[in-house]
Length: 68
Image 1: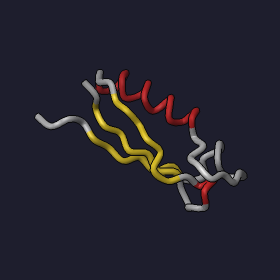
Image 2: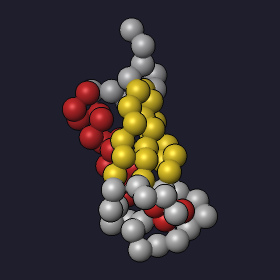
Image 3: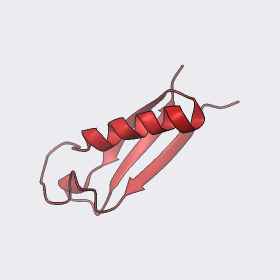
């Protein structure tokens, strides 16, 4: 079976909506998504923020991949 993969988009993210940054800024949300995946799916995942509204996009996007 292939590892768990998911893409999560969050619009109006309170961490980033009113900020400007040169790198992704959603550390709080990213940490919660890791914990949520562990509780719901019982799996460890790595989550990388691939888009961030603080960097000028209209939403924050996270890529989740199951780890061993």
